[in-house]
Length: 414
Image 1 (cartoon, rainbow, N blue to C red):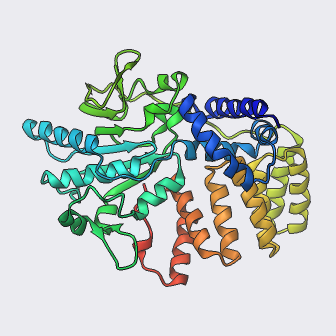
Image 2 (spheres, rainbow, N blue to C red; image 1 turned 90 degrees about the vertical axis):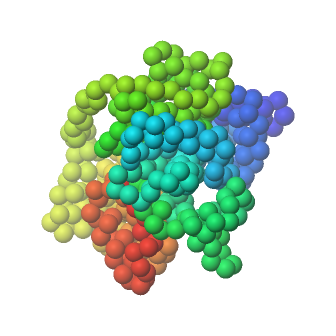
Image 3 (cartoon, one colour; image 1 turned 90 degrees about the horizontal axis):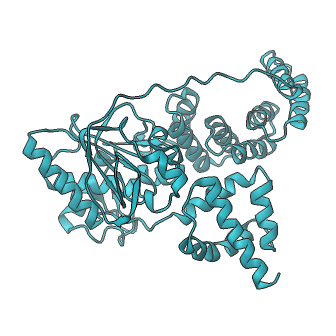
């Protein structure tokens, strides 16, 4: 393909990712995409940029790849103890101490949520606040489940910890010989890891309380105007007199002012929490959904052959339905065909990357195939998306008992 044609498709891919995810499209994204594309195309065996673009645009399975591209484009090298964050958290602690208020509630949101929440925890410790106290609430939220798991595991390189002093490294980290330092369990257990969709604004952050300090340091550098509007009202999460740290100056009573750069404080009295709409389950309204219902009924009556016949018909009618694929995966497991079941579960996950049922099915099929490490990650991801999922908790517990592991491997999930 001529260089001009490849450049045009590069710009088209950037625009597509921006349109689907809300990421800011600019020269910086184009430069990163140009470096990233060869690796992603090689992973998918795409030889032409045009072929890769049409896969992203037209194929429902391309949605997972777009999500992956957005994650890689906004990724940062893990860096703890960012000086701006440390200074602002210390200023927050001083202002709270002057008011005689104890027990802050801190939330970090976005691409550096794990690093920011650990930075805030250590900064609070420097100020003499016991983050393990029941009066202190700390949480980190992100849409990227892999980032949340890495944060829950708390494993970092020595380069990421270069800003820590030796006594702080010994106080907050385990440093086993020959292995990378890891945040001590007592500190990891202080933090709740929340699955959230930042593209939905503050309403996309699931929380059961309000926070005195919210850190979303990297977020506003990557979102475009149409998505920034959803972030202009953090009232449901920000407590009265609370503070917000972000990268772009923001006026909570009006529009974003993107001409002002740098970290800053802003305070606001929180309004009442708005009531959310109730979502009901879809009724079966076509032959495919009717076939799915019949398949589930047949499976409940242990008629595996009849269930497979109805499910196959349902998938033909609606090939991009994640629930259908999950049901087929579990049916194939019942038929003792774990390899085929794993293919169906992974297909369901490609269609709905954050479906707890698809994540659970992927974990179950990998466990049946003996890949216990991958199964554990899928179970943990399912619990991040849906903490009230007893099947995932039960499977994870069985997995740990079978492997003879201690509970230290299970992160503190929301």
